[in-house]
Image: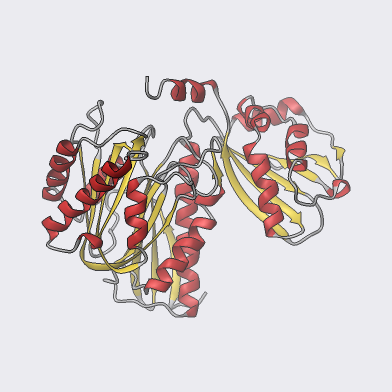
Length: 408
């Protein structure tokens, strides 16, 4: 990497510099019975480049319909979000309510409603309480500030069953100028490949064209949010947005574009893993890597099968190094596997090698599994060049309890 395009990851803290050109707010307006924050605003100081990736569920919430129509764009100036109500399966009323949220923010900023994107998350099939929403938007607008504290408030305000908000940041030095990337996300249940019950808003002060932003957010999503699973259920509201203000006055050439994409992928992956770790009732995250497949698509399909297996999930919950469950789950994939070249490592220990059991101390390995929240699973299925990574939570009784009590 040249001196003109260096990247370094940063852990998030309240002293971190935010991307230039953005203000944030998050407040409570009463949508949540708990009284926790439930309305968030992200406002740019001027029109910015924006692109998004959205749910692939055929049942699409009104906010997704609204925002999807407006992106990619070079003129977005705000994102308004609410939690506690998904505004999904709410018919024409829901469409109108999403538009009203955008209209209110647009009026406050004196811009066009098409410059405002909208996100919602929460219970499906219930109309928004628009009186509370209107009060919440006014309150959030009055509380906008370019500080870490206000960013964290916005991150809190998009959460639902999350145990905590998800935030991540990266700093890059490109052509001598420091550039910031800052992201917030939510998600804990209804997590599946092709995104999840999740929202994410990523802001940066790099200068991106509409085409660059669209390509980069899709690439980063494919490497992260499309490779996680808690329960195999893709939601109606999934949205990932990338907003680029350009206020760092830095453009990307081929080399620095690669550096920026790498850091963006890494930030997205960090947020994705935080979602899996916060999976409803989750105790562990499976970090699955498949090697030796015919191609990357085959490797992805095999990893996805392992990640979705309830038998594998419960084995991980019990810290049980049951290699038979993992290997047989991989064999359920339609992708080609060479049984005689199939090997498995669990927490760095080879427990199945070239189609046969390997000697290992099950009790010792079980203890190692218990001692870390992330359980690495490396599965080699042949001598091909295909490889894939995937992250999935385990499955506990707490997940069942949280979800059967969700609306009652």
